[in-house]
Image (cartoon, rainbow, N blue to C red; front, side, top):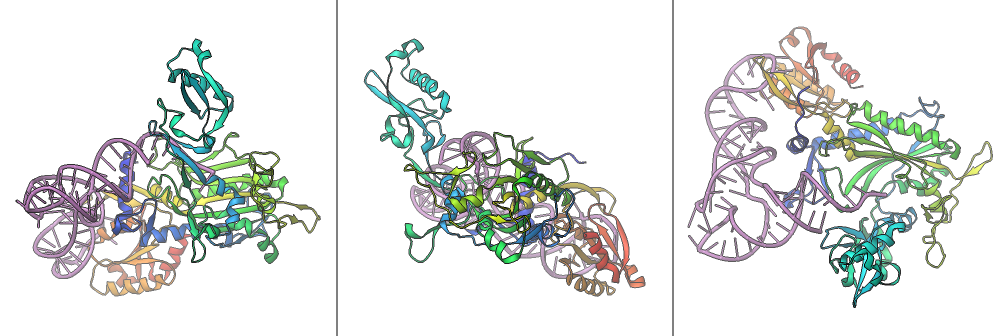
Length: 543
RNA sequence: GCGGGUGUAGCUCAAUGGUAGAGCGUCGGCUUCCCAAGCCGAAUACGAGGGUUCGAUUCCCUUCACCCGCUCCA
């Protein structure tokens, strides 16, 4: 193995290749680009399509509902869905995204930290005529001690002088404080460093209809999952599926990320590949384990087999309150510091939180068992649809609200991981047998943009005509590339750099015995096959 | 959002207060060759806006984008 380049260098090389070869471009680049948005070029779109198609094929179309796959508790059904990007605003209120993605934040000019407006708490204190609101982010049990400590420090007093401080009133949250100029920020030394609260809306807002007003505000979906939940009953009523079954969806989602970063890793517009798998509460834990392992295996089989891929089970503290299990499939992207991993996919046991929230109204995820979230007047914070989203088992007569296992993958992150994993610089001999550096994308043949390239060895003796005929035949079955320009070695290298797994070359012997060579990208091995067998051979190799 | 860095051809880089060079790549031609670098030729660039100046790619300001460190991360 050649020594790996430094992470940032390696990532820069990958970004450069993506640009050079047409995998990825900055969005609207001629106008200077747009932060958090990326376009897929001619090769990138093929790669991403192949990823999505592999996922859809493996999860949906080739799934046999008559047989329990290895590791699955039972056989199950899978169907697809394609919901809209803009949905009824109430969807996001009941899903929790509206509250969660709709924060007011204050910034501290001194500490450069940012806080959620409603999470900053503190209390008024007075000392020798100066009245200051000591703010803190400390935990509930520690806030008393913390504010005392910081008040003493602010007034330059010793602990034994604590009695001279006059505390005024109970703990308040920042929204209850009128004048931010007298607030000592949670990490500040001087007062009045907090900015006025500013709205941070992580959902993209738009308006339905020609008139814009608060009446017809809508949001671009921040996840595809909700389209599945709100169609749960439609799917049940129209397809005869029975639990356990899954609904799969691929589609764009939008999040107004505060800090888009790391190439396409954290983009504001991105594509998700999600399954909501509905099952009986009693078997949900088994299904969770099945999906977790199944999804991990999917990445492995498509080439993320090394130790850069890992499965990380969330610790109990990390879990949503209603979830009994969540695992992330993570990849050690080269742009991350050594030892750090970035999420490719999350597999979450979501219980009945989503269906019940859309049924009864938004549930409070902090309650257990889950209860309706109430507003200050004791009324439901967000009303549900009121529709019955429970399921009746026709055989047993049992009626229940299914539990949900959610494998949620990022298509762009997968594309990026496959690119990073595939990118290698190795040595290949030149025409004099001298090793030369070679850039090669060792993409899995299923994912490679071009499955093969077809070359005439030289541009004479009828070789181009034969090669073009082969190209025409292959083109009917797969994406292939034709090239007759320049030295043969150079043509091989060009294909190596874009991950084409096989090259078919028409040479002198072809004219004699109607065979061509097939050259393997990774081993550089060549063998001969009959022209007529070319296509079958390739399809066998690609699998 | 804060701090630091960067921005010149498709890519990687260079030079310069008097409008820019190279390597690779690309295209055309020669070569007809099984793993890029043999020959000839060609095209293509100062992120955007403003200011200073006789003149700005160069200096200043603003802005945008990318990278690094914070912050955020459902």
